Every structure is written in C-alpha cells, then in structure tokens.
Image 1 (tube, one colour):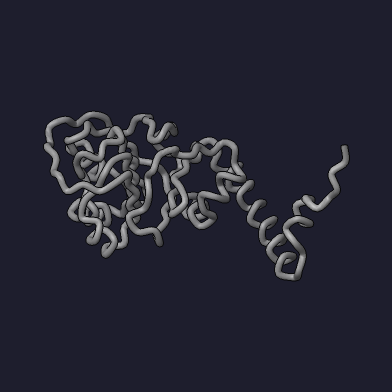
Image 2: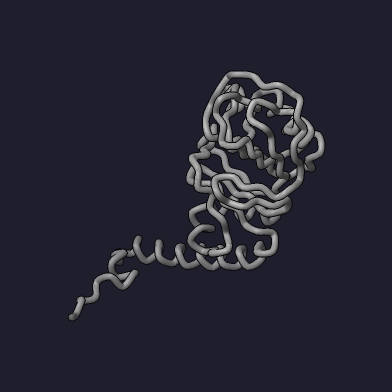
Length: 205
C-alpha cells in the first residue's frame, strides 16, 4: 500500500496528533460525500475566481493516484468543478479533488464516488481564459502545499504531509495507532481514561 493510502486509512486526526510536520488546512473545506476519504501526492493548480481553464489543463496533465489541489482564492461565487470534470478525473485515475472554492453537481459527484472536498456549492459557471499556474507551491487555508506533498482529506479535516517528512510521519502514525489500540483494549477491559492518561492522581500544592 502506498504512502497516500496508508495515511488516508489512518485519518487526519491521527496524523495531526502524531506528526508535528503535518500542516492543517485551516479553512472550512469539507467533503461532498462525508463517507469518502483520499490520500495521495498533490498536483497543484491556481485558478482565478470565475475562470477554470487552468483546471482543465491540470486534469489533462495529472497522473493516476494524484490529488488535485486547487487554489480558487477561497471564492464561492462560482462553481468551476462539477460532474463532467469529475468523470474526466476518474478516467485519468485522479484520486480526489481539494478545492479552496465551490463546486457544482454535488448529487452527481456523490453518485460517481470521487472524493471531492470544497468550501461550498455554487451553480454559476466560469469562463475559460486565464491559464494561471500549474505545478507550483500554493497555499490553501493557510497551509503551504507543494507538488508531491501528500494530501490527506476526510470528514474531519484536510492535512498536508511535506514530501520530505512522509517516512517519519508514517512511522509516527503507525506508533500512535498501536498505542491507541492498546488503550482501547484496556478501556474495554474496564480501565478508565482518567487512569490510562494519569489524570486520577491527586493534585498537591
């Protein structure tokens, strides 16, 4: 299993607790289908609000397993991504889409099963004039994303693991999963979280 899938299976909450190198996207970017999650290397694209030409080019250039990370300036005044682009992504093998902006065709996106995460919904269309930027570092929700960084998104959050920190993050995440599994086993056996976390000790002045 590749790093993106392993980290997606672990979940953003576990990554955030275990890996200080990870960057949390501090924006209300949420899944269109809360039951889906995604993890994979970032393919970055910056679009001007109201224009999605760069997004068409990014989909054509993307490789299987990548996650499109779209800086749309946080705008929800139009929906540059919908059903047709979702199908194009699936044909290309794109793992999922993260957009700091709005999408359209939410019902169709859910039916297709493509993990799509967005700031909101808007049915207004876009022009196709400005190519803007492909495959360059960008920021979404205050988090820096560079091409090749691992992007993980689920119902809780979107988080970025820098490419140079993937191996140490995987080790830290695996260790935390083992630790939590042991804690859960002890809780099921009757121990309290107060005891397990050392919170039941008397406080002395």
